[in-house]
Image (cartoon, rainbow, N blue to C red; front, side):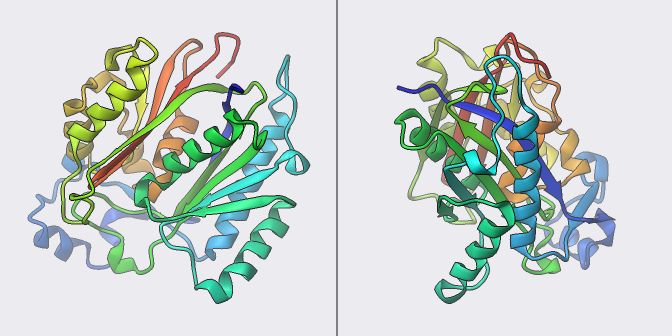
Length: 310
């Protein structure tokens, strides 16, 4: 099987930054959810919104990733530009329009990125879309189907009233990276997922049991335990929610980083890659990209080569 690498992670936040209390109806929603008005308790901070269409978020983020791919040269690390990309995986919880407009949407995306390749759209996995899409890209690379895959996720709130939920403050944004057969920033050691088809409804809780199942599948095959990870790159849900669920999954406070909960908000599926891009990683370290929604958990295990720089 061909080795697979993740390289050049990048992201874009909505261009309009606002404090959480400026979200329309924020105080009323907090009262509705019975949430104590203490920003430090929940990790309330900034949210980011955009007036750009989704395709513009995709193109701008893709250009950032590809610029990183072209710069990411060194011994055994050839540059990767638009002409080298042979597949695109595009993720979103809600693509605009329908079958009548999706063709024009993709024409804009592919033309804006300068790509001449096939693509795949992924949406039904909700906020695990990105990690799931990375797993698809990894499988394509390992089987030799494609060599250089651009993976992008992008989302924006449909309405301002949907920006606050009882588990997160949502921000508009996008993130992406390259999954490639060429040596890159991180070696992909594997992907795994676990699902409970009876608990997929929005009103169910996130399951720590599913997270432990993924750990058993993904870490055990490499002789690792949760404690061996240098960091867990999780979603930016409210601080007590994500800390409780990830600790129940077997991780420690020191492996988690909730800094971006207040800085960026919850950018749908993009959070794990945003958090990876912002983290100062350690050569030789193992890292887990992880995302959970009710009824589902997806994760990807990364290893930073000792010769890489962060």
